[in-house]
Structure formats: C-alpha cells, structure tokens
Length: 366
Image (cartoon, rainbow, N blue to C red; front, side, top):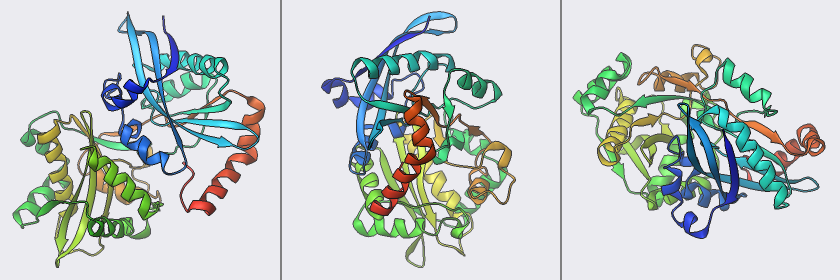
C-alpha cells in the first residue's frame, strides 16, 4: 500500500539538503539542489523544502519511503500561491503519484497554506501508458518548462575506452580527429572576464536557429558561481586565434553529470572542437565524480528528431552524435486544488503574470 505524508524539512535537513536529495529513489536532480534553490531565491521565487515519508511498493514488497523535493513558490494576487515542484516529485514508480497528490492536499489544507495549484514535473519516462495513468489521477497536462523534458543521455558507468566505443560513429570520429589535430580544451576559472565571454558565446547558439531564450547575464553569473562554490559546476573553453571559440558549463550532482550551458562561434576552423569540449568535460566528471550518466540537456522529442523545422533540430543533431538514447519525460502536470481559481489562472492570470514578470525583469516567469 502506498501512503505518504508531507512536511517541511527541518533546519538540519536543509543544511544537509543535497545529501538527502541525492539519496532519493532516482538520485535527485540538479534543479532540486541547494545551489539551485539559492539562485531562484534571488530571482523571484521562494524556495520551500518538502519531505514525503511513508510506505511504497517496490518489486511487490512494501518499503519505507522518503523523498526530499525542492518546491518553488510564487504568490498570485487575488488567487493565492502556485507551487512548482521542479523535476519532482522523485518517486520509485508512477503509481506513487496519487499518494503524493493526497499528501499535498492534506498538508496544504491542514496548514492553511493558500496554495491553489501544484505543478509537478517528475522524471518519469513518457509513453501512452504513463500519460493515460497521470490523466486518470485528475492531473491536468500543462506545457513543458524545462529544456531537458526531452533529452539525450549517455551512459558513463564504464571505462573511458568503453564509453568512447559506445558513442555514435559521428561523435566518436569527431572526438578522435579533433584530438589528432591538436584541439586543446581547458577548464578555466570563473573570472568575470571568462563568464562574460561564455555568455557572448551562448548568444550565438545555433546562430539564431535554436530559438534559445537567454536569461540575463546576472542570472547566469549567479548560477555559475553558486554551483562552482558548491563544487558542482565548472567551465571549459577551447580557443581559436587566442579567443574562446567553444564553451561549456557542466555540473556534477550526485552520480549524474549535466551539460547545462553551451555556446560557440560560427564558422570555426577546428574540426570537432565542440565534440572535444564535451568529451573532455564528461570524462573529467567520470574520473573525478564517478558519474554514471551524462545529460546533454535538451533535444527535440524522439518523434521530432528528423524535423528540420524544430527549433532544437541542430542541437539535437550534435547531441545525438554522442548517443542515440533520447528520453522523453512526462513533463509538467497540474494538481488543481481550487478549480475556480485554476480556471482564472488558465484563462488570464498566468498570461498576465508571465507578461508582467518579463516586462519587470526581462526574465522568463519560470
């Protein structure tokens, strides 16, 4: 039997937040980290630290359950509060979701928290069965928010030689040729100069075709420095004519690696330089942090990989040259706690709030 109760984390649990999150059933997600909570607190969200405890069923056996999840909260005038459980809840199985919903409702009602909507975003693989199951719970499908709700993931739980051999031939050949031709990749310090150069490279991603909406430089500086201070983030460059030509900011969180941000100059001369940057970064994480997977963070959905009109088409080509393992997650689903307020939110309030936030800050609402 699956039955959970929700509570806020204690001060001691928050002080050891990352240890708890990375011990979750699926190993947590960098967007549930203490570092990310700190960044979002500076950019319009109130971080809350939610714990689910109880019993679940794993392989037919009842098991004690605990899951630590970051919740981002915003207040909406006249309606109440929205909770965004970014990349959560972290659960063993999709069948845990109804018990999570019950725990949310009981906790919010009992404590009179004024929440009319909980947006969940579990890292559960999407298929017809999972989508149908979630719909039957009463959840409402919403638009996806994070770029890696469809993504390419490379298994890195092998030796370096075995991982290299596992790459798609295009990626493997690019890595080998760029190394033969002397492409040098450096891990660089997060100086103000290097961060500004990285931001400039990001502004050329896809040479305009990727339709990537950059946040402000201040947001990225906060993000990069916060994760770096926690020992979780690092920046890599390769160069042409003395200037950075390809950059990548990558993160280690628990046993997972992630290619978080990247950029490059168009019309470069070095063959395979972007591949060599990725290969250097991910193999460094393998050696130093023993990551078992590396998330390339964003591709078209599986059924859109060959669609040249998709705004991630070019990025998808590059990332799938490393691995053909493209995963579609279920994305964002809304737990509606007040149908009347949710109707207002859907018809008008969310659009208004998003527009006001962009005009006020120049940043995306989420």
